[in-house]
Image (tube, rainbow, N blue to C red; front, top):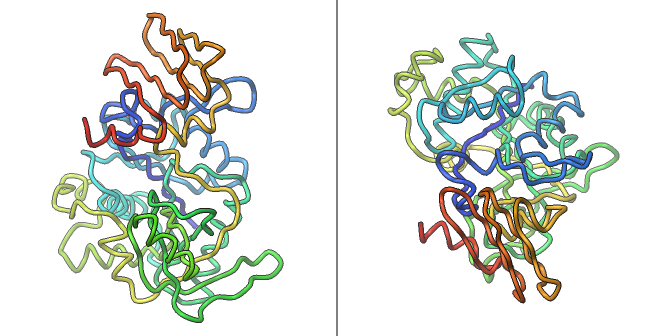
Length: 333
């Protein structure tokens, strides 16, 4: 099974450190387990290496951030270079052309799409490994991983299972359900109703046979050659893989994952995984609670008497926000 690690997304809810010039994947704010700090990208690549899956993985990244990717992971890696920043479907289509025309992958080979901002534990990758067998056993077009929700969140999409589907799993075989539909980021009230229907969080992990994407390109008279498709990249629909292909699939199944999985897409979620309150020049008073300061500039920052606040500073600007409301910065900028 081939792994495509999607390294796109500007992550504008983590402004001013993350944006078009540097996405959230490259922010070295997470503990690396050795007293230092690593990025989301470095963390998941280390997990793929630990589980023996890195040798089957390619990385898809926009051209403007290829240098940054190689600086963090090193040279000699198979990198799929997107000419411009677009949504996930063009990235997956270009990756399919790369596997077919550059690496010589056959139409029956299974491809797994894995977002590089996946923040989870090593056990999650045992489910990823099981996706290939799941496709073979079920004959489904798509096999996904759905995370069992721990609370009703409006930050995630949901996978709604078909009525009466599912098994309990056994031994090393995880629970499997047939998927009926997708729901994109509902409000909290609807999220509670979906959880009552045993819906799962959509973590963006999809597996399919390579021929599925090649057939899509053929039907639209688009090239299956990587270099040629790269030149015609703008002709691909600028939409998500979920919308263009997954939601129109004839048959989908999902493996249920019940362990830790998070989307570190806001300052509130990201700071919850950091092991220090201040990075860079900053001082937080003793009466302040749950405050994080991330300062990339050579100027001092003092925070006094505040609680539940993120202060983030770069040469792009300054953010001072209640952590619970910090995601609104995407709309404001």
